[in-house]
Every structure is written in structure tokens, then in C-alpha cells.
Image 1 (cartoon, helix red, strand yellow):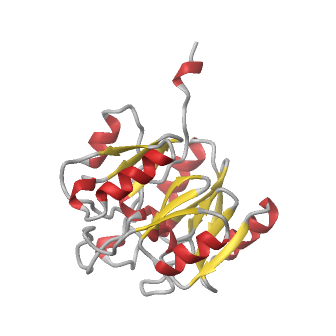
Image 2: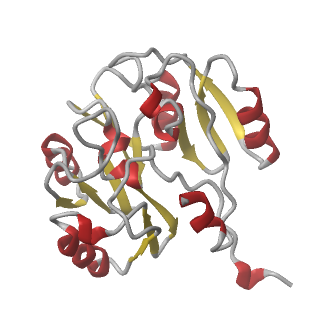
Image 3: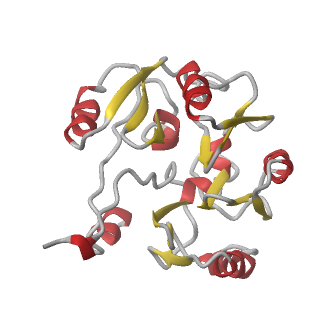
Length: 231
């Protein structure tokens, strides 16, 4: 349903295959398996069954960097679960894959270690200076590094097999001024606050379904085409 809603808006989607060993509810979550470093660089977790994904990324012009394999249990599943927001990278303390730490050093990006290992899951990037999160440690660290932060309540995001999903896992930017959500913001107790925060940043929400918010492992933007430049 989500892919159909995106494709109906002219957005090409790349499905992420199941990662062997990860629990079934999160085995296809992109935010565990990939980290878009910036530009054409992308880190992908090593493991069996990656060939099709790697080839699809390379065909789209990406330089794929092989990260370490994932393990089924925390913290072995979070080395790539980092949120790169402008000039900061938020990730779990002592849990970040060396490819990401090396990239941050090369690119002049400040690494922000936090207690929450599922950092990308917990961060909805609104723009290069603004995030939404339900995690208090991330909210505090992000504010210390100059980001605008909306701290929301935990819960009311579906993720089968778990008590709750995360705000980053049910959202993703489709453009600089358009932020997609997997369900209706009215299903969340802070839905109106989220809308107000987005509007204050000049960003419009796009609700892809009428149902509750659903953690799908993030909608990760890879490429953007400016149709105005077409001949």
C-alpha cells in the first residue's frame, strides 16, 4: 500500500530484501541495513543475499561501501542506524560502524553519540537543522549541537512484535519541503504539534495512508529529480 501510494506520486521505490538473522518484523528495515552517507556514497551491511540490492544501488550511480555484518540482537543490529542531519551525525555511543565514523571525519560532520542505539529509527529529519524525536537523550544532544527539536510522546506507532515503533521509522523526506508519513498524524497524540512544527520550518506533511502510523524502517531518500529542468 505504501509503495503504491509513493509510486502514484511518481516516486520510484527500491525494496530492501530481508536480512538473514534479523527478527522478522524488522528484517526488511532499510534503516538497519543502509546508511546514506551523502551524495553518491552509501554504506550497506555485509551479508548473504545482498547482490541484488548492491547491483540496484550501483545502477543508480551509488558508490557502495561494505560495512560489517549485522547480528540478530542489540547492539549488533544498530551499527548503521545513524541519522545524518546537516553537519551532525547522531548514533549510538560505541556502536557506530567505522565506515560512518571515518566518513564523518572526512566530511567535517560532528559525530553525536547518544544512549539510544536505534538513533535513525528515533529521528525524523525535517530539514538540515530540525528533527522530531521521542527519545530524551537524542533531544538533549541535538539541542546542544544547535538543532531545532520537537520532542514528542513515545507510543502510538505500530511495529508488530514490539511495544511501539519510532517516529523516524514511519517517515521520510521526499523533497526539501515535503515530509511523508506512513499513516495519519491524527492517529498520534502529538499529531497537531508535529504539523505545527513542520509548518514553522516551511515543510508540508504528506500522509500516505489513512491508517495509524506504522514503522517500516524509515523512508530513506536516495535521489531527487527536479522535473523543472527537463527539456
